[in-house]
Structure formats: C-alpha cells, structure tokens
Length: 108
Image (tube, rainbow, N blue to C red):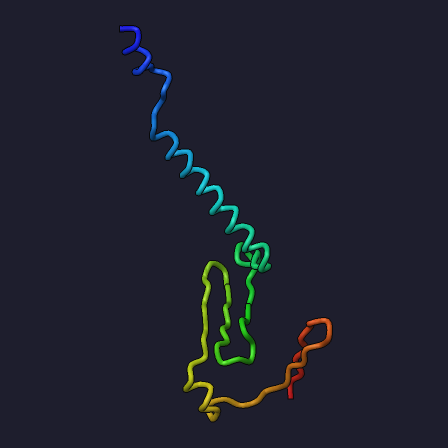
C-alpha cells in the first residue's frame, strides 16, 4: 500500500504546465526579436504620431514610397507603365544629395 502511494504522489504537478511555460518563453522571444529588428533598421518612425515619407530602394526598379498621414499608411510602387511613359509629367526641378545625406530640392 505504501509503494502505491509513492507512485501516485500529488507532488508531481501538471505535465501540461511545462508546455505552457515553453509557450510563454516563445512569446517573449518573439516580441524581443520584433523590437530588436525595429530598432536595428531605425524604423521607430512607424510607431510615432508624426507624418513621414519613406523611400525604399531609391532610383531602382523595385522602388517603393511609403507615406504616413495621421493613422493612414499608403504604399506606392511605380508600375512599368509609369516608368516607360514619361509624357504624362513635366520636370519641375532637381534634387541633390549632399555628402552628409541631406537632400536639397532646387525648383526650375
């Protein structure tokens, strides 16, 4: 009788508690990874309340323009029609990038 009590002791606990703890650890790791990626790529502007414009891959065929106005985020990707047909717009100025990364627009 004593031997049977030792096999079924109440100190064992719930075997599913280990699975729940692993899930908690995985969630904490995922959140920490997301925070690290946002800070590494300097994308903290996404979470601010200020309006901004972000240009990814400028001057290349896969260029994207991302703008945030208030709570609305818009993505603009130029299509092939817009890149080949240049008769729809007109040149209004020139932009220069300085050595320190600052961009200066000079209207014509």
